[in-house]
Image 1 (cartoon, helix red, strand yellow):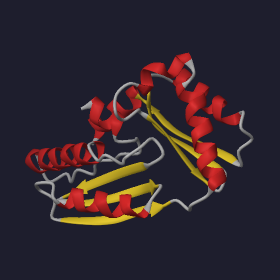
Image 2: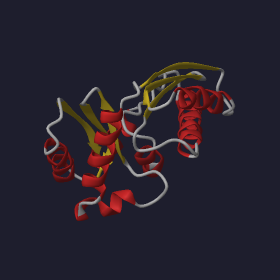
Image 3: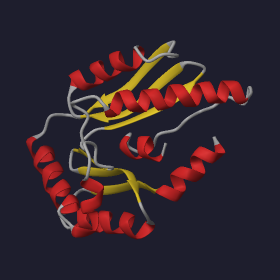
Length: 181
């Protein structure tokens, strides 16, 4: 379960209705299947942030993607997941900007090129996502501890960006959030 959350780009929330254990399990299973569908999408990258909220078979997608076709294709993939009755697509497409694209690449290289973050870059979907919009940077994903969260932010600060929002969560924070849902 931790892996699905790490790969799905944090900010992921599961809204389980307090109707009963059966409904909670059903929402959780749909959520896990939605996370897998996004994670297995070939064009999902560290420059995209997709979050999902599942309640009674209604999946609400939120976050930002780099290309319009990603939003459409992710919505279609989610609609095919067993147990999904409806998809509300609230994904935002980031504006096309050469300077934002270059900044994304430079920040990703700084983070994943740092020896402290090499283990985060393993696998097909690294757990730290870099979202850049008009020079404003948001970091999302999951890190092992608060020190890694602070280090990732400090690596971004060296690029003179307009602002940095650090939404990285620790594994403990993610585990606690899941236990509460």
